Image (cartoon, rainbow, N blue to C red; front, side):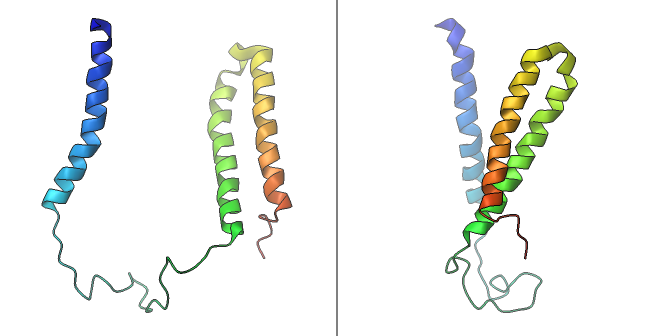
Length: 118
């Protein structure tokens, strides 16, 4: 049981930190709504609709998925390139499988015409 005590302490601290910051933020915040705070920020144009009333096209989400595909690819390619010599043929095969999965996501977005910017 003694070997699990540090894990328990870490779990309690990990749960207490976000809860504590939320409680402290709620305690010290001021709630004074006024007309100036409800105006559009730095644009000067009155909002005609609410952000919750409009529906977004599927294309928006496909572009977001495409960004994640390329972002994840970049994040995982750099450490692989640094350790390429130590990973050997197995590391090359694993990266090829990873890239194949990303290419499938890329072609999915391409087929759904998420790359057509016009």
